[in-house]
Length: 457
Ligand code: PFF
Image (cartoon, rainbow, N blue to C red; front, side, top):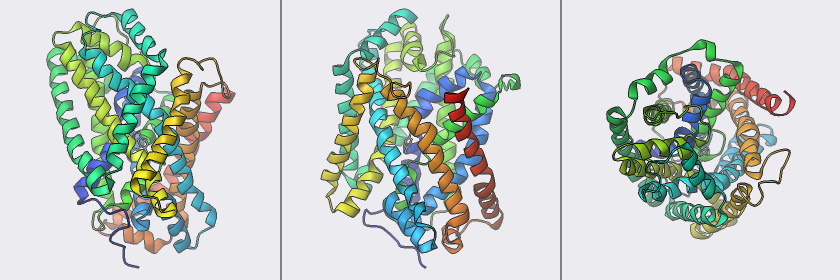
């Protein structure tokens, strides 16, 4: 069967736009906020190496599989999966794959917007000069005050959500396509400027050693699992985003090469973010690289507050983080919007407002879990931690595992071959072997160990 050229939502104007969009989805809080602190808490270099291996061995093959389903179906993830399952004559239950991803995407969007809101708020916090000369304690107080104030959190969360709606309402070509073509080059440029600053004003050599001195003694099983989870989250795998974006990909684009470029950009941004953040952190006495989630919102502002020009550099930094989060969040909204348009005959504006409204409402739970609901527990978690755990540690691995198994074993071989057109025989066989054998075993291990770690150990 010939590939359909385009679905009802339109298509990216070129392979390059797909690369920018998928990179926009991939590069986000996961790279700039989470990667540095997870690397920091796991001893640096050895973790980074494991993370890169996971990206190549599991992330890239599963991401390719996800794009294949999307590009074959040319619809929202739910309908692309359903059609591909039907055409492959596979068990209907595989159809739950699309639902799982899209539901996980909406849940993630709800709390992602809250954290992205912190970054937006910090642009002004840093730009106002409030943090000049701050030490760990005073910067900690600024952060705690923000978290303790639901009205400020809701304000930033709302602004961020409106920014996302503003883009997705414009559709694939004029909304998402134009946004990523502007935002991504801007993001790369700002990143290079900050890298320059970090070389000139930070302790770049120490940051380099921290991320690239591979100390294998520091490597343990749990760190390997964290590296794998991080590889999934950062590549936006298992949540419908990449499948939806794949549905708008030009039919001639080579999936393997394209996804490798995206994975390269994504890892480069994570590592450069790590270099920038640790250069600044190591340049300031008394700040630990293993500061955890507070690294970006407490340790880094202390570093900015101590350096000449720190107000400007710090403001650029938080603009950069906000842009990265923005281009990721739009990819969480689009899959569901596309589905509502297809199946409920809604127009784009209404579909957007409904879904963003839903994610916003659910996000209030995360906002309140940092203040007025901080005492409430769901299975021992705060509301925010619960959603984070449910999506990242349960829904995402199951979804990734199902994608690998479906494309590896149940999807019609001819449909798979069509998607691999232009890819060499060696690469195709290597991909198939990985997606059938290596990825499922590795993902299952993450899943089992993640649950064991949390509840049984
Ligand atoms: N990859 C994004 C990040 O690293 O921040 C997060 C994300 C975006 C996850 C979109 C999933 C997704 F569908």
